[in-house]
Amino acid sequence: MDRFQPVKQRHAVKLREYYEHCDYGLCEYSVGTRLMWRSVLHSEWTEIAGCLVVRNEHKGQMVFDYPVAGPEGDEEAALAAMEHDCLEKGRPLIFSVVPACRIAALVARYPCLSICDDRTWRDYVYYRQDLQLFAGRRYSGQRNHIKKFRTLWPEAEFRALTGADAPLIEAFWADYEAEFPKGKNEKAKDELKLAKQMLRLAGKPFFLTGGIVVNGKLVALSLAEKCGDTLIIHIEKALYSYTGVYPTLVQEFISYFGDGCQWVNREDDAADRGLRTSKLQYGPAHLASKFTVRVQNALMTRGGTEIPALKTERLTLTALREEDIPAYNALVLDGARNRWWGYDDVAGLGAPVEERSFFQVAQRDFENRQAVNFAVRLDGAFIGEAVLYRFDCRGGAELGCRIAPAYAGCGYGTEAFAAVADWALYELHLDRVVAKCFRENQASFKMLSACMRKTGEDETFFYFEKLV
Image (tube, rainbow, N blue to C red; front, side, top):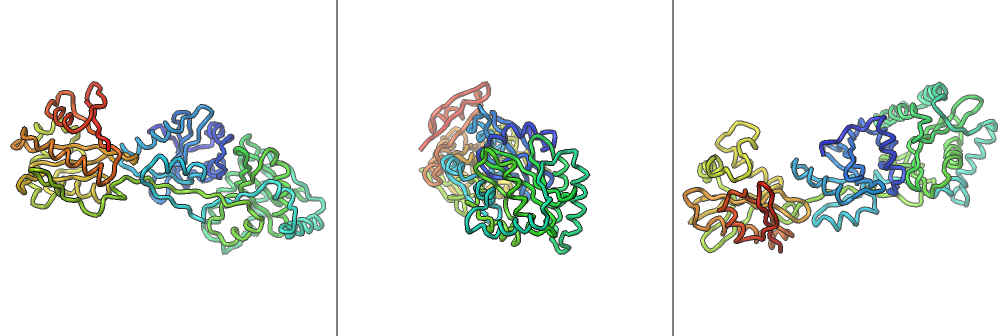
């Protein structure tokens, strides 16, 4: 998953291979949106198992588009790779702009998740024939505006725009900026800047570009692309001084480029009141939802606010306490004891070791719902720890246990391990708990064999799991 590369113009043809036949119907699943907003969203892309995977940065978090499968793409494998990447890097798995047709797949895949559908970002989707014909009473306003435009400027013509029209397009931007409302907010100004950059790609094979010309002057332009059976219009700009030019542009552009499409997507309104009013007046067939799906683990949804106390025949398991710090540090820093632990606690700190370092890591991991560190106690004294961690967001987690040397060989590890595994399966309602041990670690092999089922091995580890 480190093969991601920033989206650049030279990648457009490769991205288009996926988007050309994509049936999601949302503007984000297109070359135009990826190129236009790449600097804002820091968009990156890669190919996994024949699927296009795009990730962006939104509000300081990394979020993924839903994978777009090619002809032989394996959506399941792409999702699994995304899950593994987030798990290894300790990041939440967040999908943004998920189309409605893929929500059921995510709900079926992940036991715990939250779903948000923000009205602000829904795309306005219209029947192509509605915008091409403007037939019926509800479009009388658009027809009247088009009639007025044709009356005032009978010589106006619509035509495709190519790279050779760059001077004409540049002149249009000068005229447009002269009419641009001075009070427009910074978001609108930024969008205009990006639109101007995009029009430099007029004539590229992955874009459809056209405009209305009056006596050699470009008075309106639009840029779009076809994705599946949807014509996605990325840019619509016109000179307001030409009354009726906007509905005329919409009708002419779709008549010229819309063949083979059932739908027209005119993108979202970004919560702009004027845009919202205008787009609603054109009678959308529906507003296409873009769901944000945050995949959560069972600890996030069912773990409570405190680590519970567990009791076995001889032991009590609780959260770590301040008075445990000396004994806990001794356990963590016992190199001989921890050579089979499989994790370098000191290197994992990323900072010099201080008295409270390991204690604070355990606290922070639980606060972030990434792990549960249980202190194993015998008659109240700290003798080891059992850690439930690596929550995989699909109903599983890994369990590890280590006991202080003075208490080894008495079965305390097995007892503590079994207690936490049962808590994970029957209180957190995980589907499975997994564990592993080095092949040379016969003590751990014996303990895990007593609690779990062996599922496999490789050159380094034996693997185990326990299911509900």
